[in-house]
Image (cartoon, rainbow, N blue to C red; front, side, top):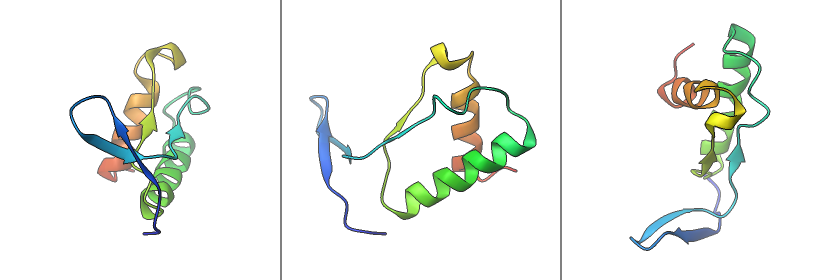
Length: 76
């Protein structure tokens, strides 16, 4: 893990990486290629110290959240 800048989030003392990873581009489907790409990217981001991930239902109903969850869990 690299030394990455951290910032406060909210008022409860939570800290996250200043650099985040948005999931807007992972919205087409949850097919195998998409899951593999998301997993590889999330794994690389975590290795670099990034722990701030942006998802939203507007990107597609639960698609980006599902991809992120599977990537963090390590599911194929």
